[in-house]
Length: 117
Image 1: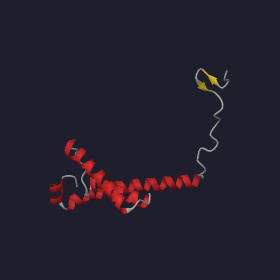
Image 2: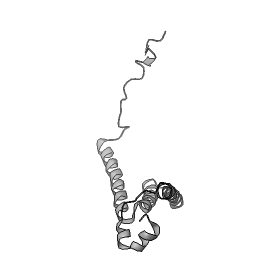
Image 3: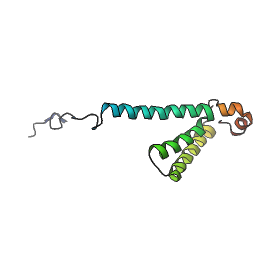
Image 4: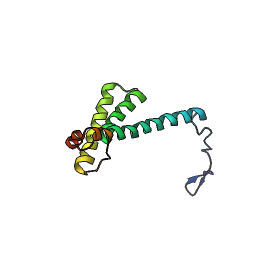
């Protein structure tokens, strides 16, 4: 009979996780978190300037190419596919009312033509 099982739940043998930070220092973790939140702040800034769907495409391209070192071609492909899916689902199918952007404020004809700037 196994002595480390109590009603189907292991009570010993696994032990505590010795390193919850996966070998990274606290300073490195804080640095990576700061970089991540800077990317998110950049996305919000892009949304305000160019609009939500174009910002998604720009953000995905930049994050994949600069952040993850993907090739420009694959980053552009993923960005285009994601933007097209977002446009089709949220703009055409669900008719989401997008937030106003500065680009649309400066160029009202662009906003009237595209509808999501």
